[in-house]
Length: 161
Image (cartoon, rainbow, N blue to C red; front, side, top):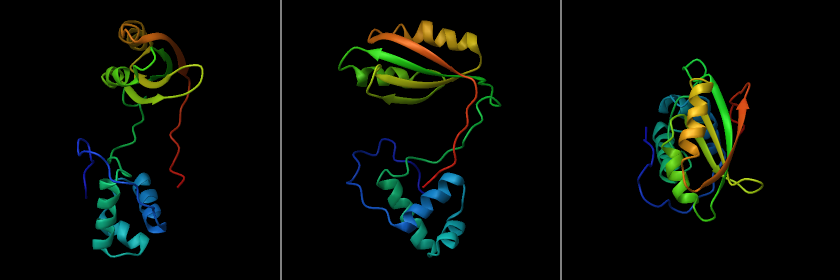
């Protein structure tokens, strides 16, 4: 099966997805390890067709990669938090590159509203989270302020395609 597109250059224009493409996406979101054969059987196409469709979805950037859904608490990262950041205007790209380097950062979004960036992090404990916020985040010159929202309980939702 195709690997991710990382570093593969600009994406082609988006093509519309038909019902079979959407079924394939649902299947792979539920089980990224599904074999080509099982995908083909469940969407009622040949293996060659299923393989070609999955490769096209990867090449078009619809599928960004394949991975495991992790229970962060069981994996030793029992503390999670959303951190909002206000940043200096026009510094998003610079800040984003620095946030990507943070240990435990799992989602970064540029947003509109009362703050500029929403960051989801997973840390081993509150001490590590405090260190991340007070030492690493607040040391980024373009970060004007932060607010930390501690997550008490979380749940990844199953795909709803």
